[in-house]
Length: 259
Image 1 (cartoon, rainbow, N blue to C red):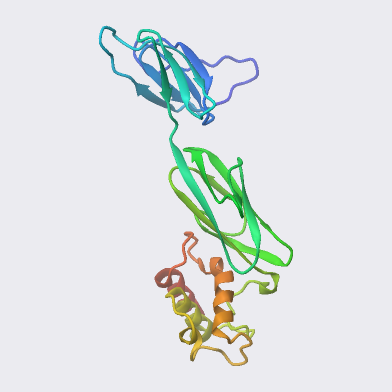
Image 2: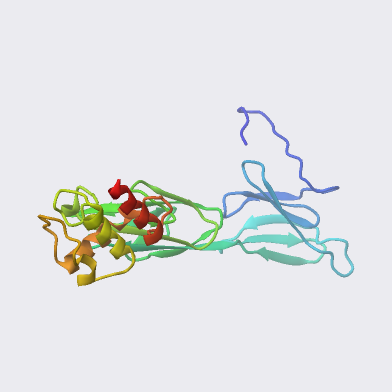
């Protein structure tokens, strides 16, 4: 909600016979206000949320006279009729970041809270916009996000509930990123596609590669193959839903390789 400089915009509070007593900026970035029996929230886009309080013995209403954000992340108010101070806690959501792959790097958030490696979990107020960025160390490359974000660009999230994001780092020798998983400079449904599908079904060891290596394959060791597949795992999220699944991403990949 914007207006020209110097212009006055009046917003009607959607409560019959209300008297607005005070207004303050909340810890969530919205404006919070009081009326006789209500603590209300209004966003800068003009969206209201109302918390109406019941009457209590001997009084028609609490008669809230003031409100302010406390140092604990809650809102504090004064109830004139009840001779009481009230505290309204803000809902929070937990964000968890995990690091994957054989490369190295870190993820930090804005606003601050996540600094992973190290602090990989943080609670943010619901509705907070959080931007995650990945930084690689020398000799590594960032291969992508999974979970709440996808791709390799910035990860921007509006917190609404528990959120999980993984960031995968690979050695820079994995570049260029491609699904030629046996590294023989060609793509095949019954080689690269089959190995990828087996991987997504959780197969390891010799069952991962047996009978599926292409002619001239240079990556043949099952353990090294598994590390390589883990390093490029975000590349297998072909439907872009933040998850890698054998019966969706794997099936579409092998169909594509069959033409």
